[in-house]
Amino acid sequence: MLNVTGLHLWRGDRHVLRGVSFEARAGQCVLLTGRNGAGKTTLLRAVAGLLDPEEGQVAWRGAPARKTRDVFHSELAYLGHEPPLKGDLTGRENLRFATGIRRAVAAADIDAALTRTGAKEFSDRAVRTLSAGQKRRVALAGVLLTGAPLWLLDEPTTNLDADGQQLVATLIEEQLARSGIVVAAIHHALTLKSGETVNLELGAA
Amino acid sequence: MKAGVLDVARLVIARDLRLAFRKPSQLLQPLMFFMIVATLFPLTLTPEMSRLRDAAPGVLWVGALLSSLLALEFLFREDAQDGTLEQFALSGQSLTWMLFAKTCTHWLLSGLPLALFAPIAAVGLGVPGEAMWSVVASLALGGFALSLIGAISAGLTLGARRGGVLLSLLTLPLAVPILVFGADATHQAIIGGDFGPPLRMLGAIAVLGVTLAPLAAAAAVRIGLE
Image (cartoon, rainbow over all chains, first blue to last red; front, side, top):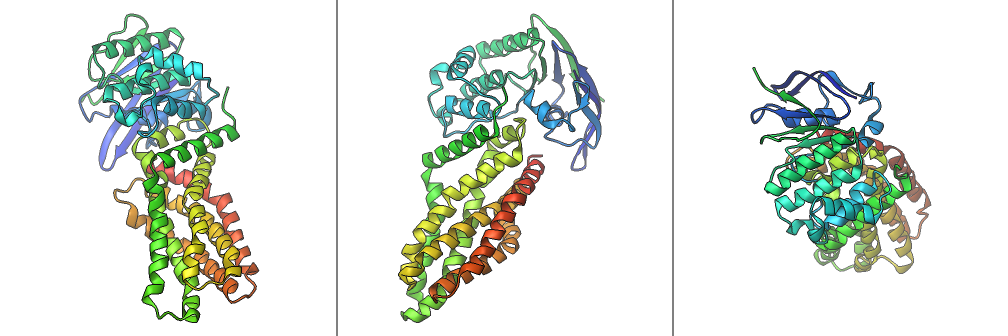
C-alpha cells in the first residue's frame, strides 16, 4: 500500500537521503534504524509530505501521495519528536481539537483512547505541567484516535518507562493486526511478538 | 466520518479563543501598546485642539499598524513551535480554510479590541464625538485587512529564526494602502467630509485579502514547516 521509490533529499548542502526505497504492505511494520543524523526523521517527514524530496516518489494505494494529498493525510497519523500538544490546554482538550478537525469524535472515544495509553488520570491537567513521558502517552492516544491505517512514528518510545515501551509495542502489534501499516524510526530495539517486521537501515555506506 | 468544514472552523476558533483567554498577556500587549502610543502623543504636542485633530488620523493609524505587527508575531509562531501547526497541515483538511479561521480569530482578539478601545484614545486627540463611529468602523475593517495580509508574512517567516524584523519588513509595503485609505477615512470623518470612498477602498482591500491571503498563507506555511 505504501511505496517509496528512490527518494533523494538534500538539506542545505548535505545529501541526507540517497535513493531510499521501501515498501510496506497492510499488516507490515517498517523499522528505520541508523546512527544519529542518518536521516530517519527526514525520511519520515518526506513520507508524510512535510518535506519535498528532490527526486523520488511516495505512493499510497498506488497513487502518488502528492497528487492526492488530502486523502493521503486523512489516512495518516504522524507523531514527531515532540508531542504536538498545546501546553495551556489539558490533554483531553488537546485531543478533542486535534481529532475533531479530522473526524467527528465522541467524548467516550477520547476517554477510551486515554485509558488505553494510561493517560486518563492526568488528562485533565494542563499539558505544560505533565512530564515528558506523560505527554507522550497523551500524544499516543491522539494517534489511536485518528483511526488512520498508516502510522509514522518518530522514536515513539522516547521518554517512556519500561511499561510505556511495552505499551508502544502492543499498540503497534494491534495496529498491524488491524491490517494497518507502521513506519517507525527507532533507537532502542523494539521487539514485536506478532506482525511482520522489515528493518531498514539508513546511512549505511 | 470526515469532519465538515464548518466544524473545522468552529474548532479552530474555539481552540484559539480558549488559548488566548488562558494567556491574556499576549492579548493585552498589542492593545496596551496602541493605547500608550495614542495617549502619550497628545502630551508631546501643543494642546491646541485644531492641531491635535490634524494629527489624530496619523497617530491612530500608525499606532494601529505597529500594534498589529506586534500581534502578528503570535499568529502562527507558537503553533509552529509546539508542532500543532504541523498537525493542521497533516489533518487532510484544507489548510487554507483552517488558516483563514485562525486569522479571523486573530482579528477578533487583536484588531477588533483595538478598534473598540480607539475612541478612548481618540477623545484625547480631539476627535469629535460624531466621528467616533467611523473611526471604529475604519479601524475594524483596516485591522481585518492587516491581519489577512500579515498572515502571509507570518507564514513566510516561520522558518526564520527571530523572524520579527523580517515580518515587519515584509508586511509594511503591503500595509501602506491600508494605512493611506484608513487615515483618509478617519480624516474625512473628523472634518465632517465624506468618508465613504476611503472606507469602501478599505472594504475592497479586505475582500481581496479574504479571497487571496489565506491561499498564499497556506502555501507559505507549508514552506515554513519544512
